[in-house]
Length: 159
Image: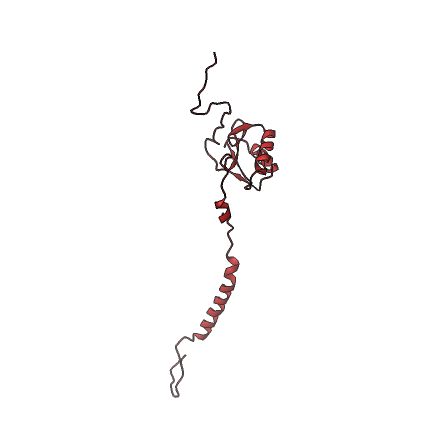
């Protein structure tokens, strides 16, 4: 702040910073109050320590994948079945699991309404979450043939 001395006739050319500091303090208080309202929380599903210590059931696949193929056939974990069998089997599988998540994987050429119908069918089985698998150019993995011999298994020719 500048003081005028007696007898000084020169004008005071210094900036009075007191109002500027007052305005800056008010703006700082406004930003401090407004900032927490603009931060959005991100929800994450992190695994708990008890989930990582539990032994996994190795005889069942770890995730349930419903595939819709280009020829409109449906498979659960690469095993072909009709829609009624899919609903029944999926309900039984979900009942036995703690994690009730089902993924739907469809071929890119399958009609949208067919995929929605299968998703509705999966939803009827009672999962907690239904997810969509990443779209692949060649569609879902080919189904396994239950009648095909297992690799390394001896096959006998019948004459």
